[in-house]
Length: 47
Image 1 (cartoon, one colour):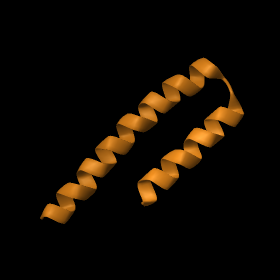
Image 2 (cartoon, one colour):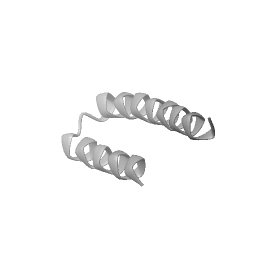
Image 3 (tube, one colour):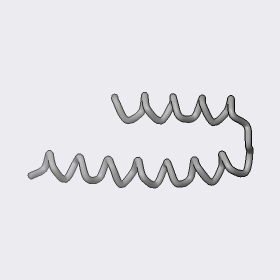
């Protein structure tokens, strides 16, 4: 049960980060920065 809660909380955190990231990406319109942020996000999630 604790494991399931951990997965759910992780996905909620990811969703919030992605939403914030998309807002920043749309504002910045900098593809290199966007790609870097995506890589950082993926590394953070897989740790």
